[in-house]
Structure formats: structure tokens, C-alpha cells
Image 1 (cartoon, rainbow, N blue to C red):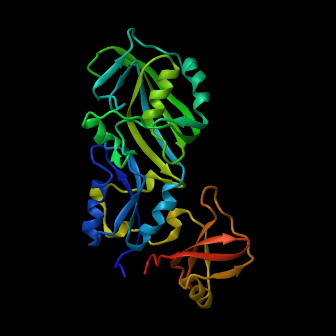
Image 2 (cartoon, rainbow, N blue to C red; image 1 turned 135 degrees about the vertical axis):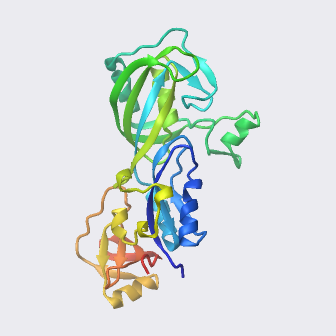
Length: 304
């Protein structure tokens, strides 16, 4: 059995990889059994849901949750990585200035279900190889478009300023926020919005502010992490839970199901998932709720 099993909410700083953000967990909890749900680009900051021990089995369900981001779109030029300071690949022949109304007019095309092509510099696998690795080797390839959902896309601020890129031209910079599905690339979203405006675009200041019901304000930076930051209660994941008797829990532990006729409110996107709590209120198993019964998915033993 793992000495520790639970969830940690990390606020990853820009400049390190998501994998590097996990190093303090391995050191503090003396285990290699750590993982996280949903990588962030090195230049991005914000919320990463990490897990230790048996709780790592929960991560695939967390990863499927809606994500929220804030970011800055720069219009007027494009880079190889689609990040503001990458190698310049495209540039408007004129100084670019767009009004708030012009930008807002195209955003409706990017709300709802859309088709999106991920960036060439990404972790997308092409015949078993990362796309970013293929780019560095000079290989030619195409990444197929895939369906993603943008539930919210809002402008928070707009200004025409000298670009931070070495081109020195004035560009329109737009601060934005969005809620989106798993697999959405903010870099691609900015590229495509710019193209729809008849320009080029890239992004800076990407920050993940929420995963499902979990806000980044509840997270801790990796360098400030302590043992006390391990969350052993299922409430941190905002999954509903049910309290079972010892006999009921024995059935669940053995992979069975128990009758359940009380209503359970399931938040949207959680696939009717509930935690089974023992008589001490400790989450022992992740279950599926169906009308009339609760079925065991797998044993967790969080908090033991």
C-alpha cells in the first residue's frame, strides 16, 4: 500500500514543464507514483491537478473535465511555435489595428463545436513520434483537424501597442478568456482567430485558471509544496459521494454493486461518477451511479 494517496493542486509557473512541476511531489512523498491531468506548455502557467499513489487512477476522469484559460492574442505576425517570441514566419505588410467590434464579430465562429488543427510544435503523436520532435528534425507531416468545444470565449481587453516581437511593428493585443473541452490548443485558437480577421496571430500569457470546478486560486506553487497540501478528501475533485455501511463497502471493495434508491445530483461532465465513502468518511472506491444501484469501478483507498 502507498504511504500517501491523494490529490495536489499545483500552480505551475511559466518556464518549467508540467513533468518538472511534479519533482517536489516525488521528493516530499518519497514515491515515483505521481501523475497529473492535462499538460501545460512550458511557457504557460496555471492549474495542474496532480495525484499521488492510488489516486493517480482518478486522473483520466479529471483530464476529461472542462478547462478555463486566460491569454493574450497578438495580431499582425505569426511564429513557428505560435508563441509571441518564437521564430517569425509570417507578418502583415501593414501595421495592424482592429476595433473591438471587428474582433467580436468573428468570435461567434469559434464558439461551440469547432474543428481545430493542433500546432506543429506540440505533443501530438504522428506515427508514434511527437510532432515537435519531427519539426526539430525537419520532417514534413500534417496533423489532422479534430473536434473541440469552446463553451465561452470573451474579450477582456484590447490595445494597439508596439509588439514584443523583434519586428517592432505596432500590433493589436487582445486579452481573452475561454472555457473549452479537453484537447483544445489555445495557440491554435489564436492562430485561427487571426486568420479569420485576415491577419496573422500568436499568443502569450497563457494561464489555466480552472479545471472543472477546481480553481487555480486553491493551488500551491511547486516550490511551496508541503505534506499538508495533499488532499485526501474526495471533495477536492467536486465528485459527489455516498456514505456506505461496512457491509455495503465490502461488496464495493470486491467489485460488486449495492442497491441505491436515493437521488444523487451528478454535475455535468462527470459521467455519473461518485465516490463511495466508508463509515469514517474516507473515500475507498470510485463508482458509477445508475438508477437503483451503485457499481464499483475501482478501489482507491484515498486517505488511508
